[in-house]
Image 1 (tube, rainbow, N blue to C red):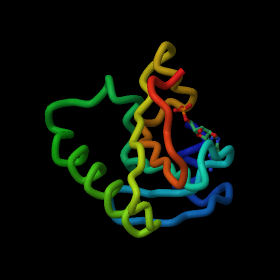
Image 2: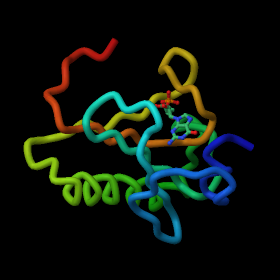
Image 3: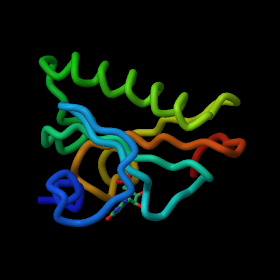
Length: 111
Ligand code: 5GP
């Protein structure tokens, strides 16, 4: 059980911006940009590395949903999608999540 399961189950509060039968999106508690939203599958998937071939439709749904949320947030000048995976990738919560970051110019490469 991670903090994200508790958000899905409404056991702890979150600023939820989008929900459908497969996914949930809420604002990051420690935003790294003016807009910083986390989009997660409701299904428990530990990380990108744990995706299976049968998750292909879900991943497509998540990416299209990320785009839709970015559009609804008014990120017309662009945005960044990030998925941290594993220790070296900087993943700190063991539940697959897509970061949607925008509202400022991003730098590259990420640290
Ligand atoms: P990661 O570092 O795993 O890629 O991203 C995890 C993200 O979850 C971090 O950006 C962190 O700020 C966010 N986060 C951790 N705990 C909570 C929480 O309880 N509520 C919300 N809204 N975000 C959280």
